[in-house]
Image (tube, rainbow, N blue to C red; front, side, top):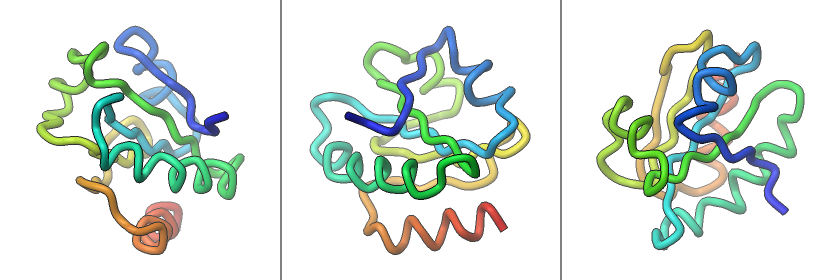
Length: 108
């Protein structure tokens, strides 16, 4: 089971933009190989940072409005939100260590 919450175009504002916690948004698709590679890493990060950070997933195939609103051109794209605004991004599947370093900087 995934530790990341699935969000849609309809729930994006309430789950991400209005979140009290910082949020990592994973823009992904079922057919995307690199998305499947990074998914377990994001689940681990979601579990390790429970209460400090929220990890959500947006399926770009069924939620194209949100993906285009944030100019997501390739997947996986991770957007780091704090206070309702994008603070940072990662494009592509990256090693867990690199992602953890990014998260630690983001939460500092």
